[in-house]
Image 1 (cartoon, rainbow, N blue to C red):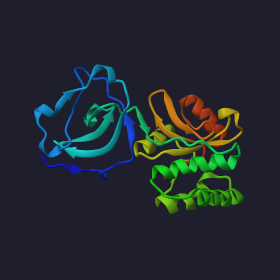
Image 2: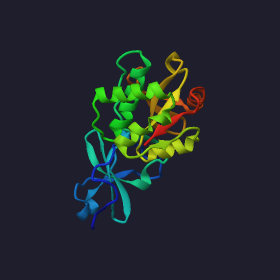
Image 3: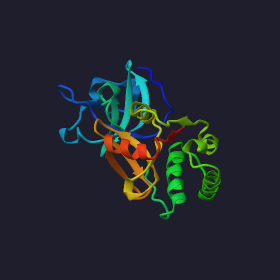
Image 4: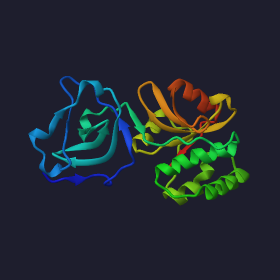
Length: 232
C-alpha cells in the first residue's frame, strides 16, 4: 500500500478525541504504512477512549486519511473518520507574562502565536516590535507587519462568528483575542487554542496556564474587547 503524505512530515501538534460509535475503537500499531496487515489493527483500551490523543502527522493510505498519535504508551494511526469534529485543541505551550504590565501581556500572547508557527524571534526584538505598535495603535490588526514578517500571512478575525474561529483552529492556527473582564482585568489578550461543544480552551498569559470558558462567557468578554481577533 503506497503512502501519500497530505501534510508536512510533521504537522503542528494538536489533540483529538474519539467519536462515540457503536462497536470497538481501534488503531493501526505500525510505523510502516506501506505494509499494513490485519495484525496491525489493535483495539483501543476502554480506560483511555475518552482521553486526548496527541497528533503529530497526517497521512493518506489505504484509501483514507490517518492521524499519527501518541496517548500514554500507545503509538499508532487513527482513522480520521473516527475522530470527533466537535473537539480540537492545539498543542501550544502556555507562557506566563513577566509582569502585570500590559506590554508583557501582549508580548506573551504574540510570542505564543508566533511560536506555534515555529518562528525564531528573540524576546528583545519582539518587545521592540510591540513597543512600536503600542506607540502607533492599539488595534490587533495593526500587528500585521510583525505577524506577516514571521509567518508570511495574516488573518483578520475581527467580528467574525465562532464558526470561523473554530475553522481557524481546525487549520491548526491559534487565535489572539482581545478581551475585557477576564482575571478582573480591564483589557488583556488571550490565545484561543481549542474548542468543544460547550467550551473554549485558551492560554492565559496572566495565569500562565491553559484555561477553559463557556462560549457565552467568552462572547461577553470578547464583545467588551470590541470583538478584535487575529491569527496567521
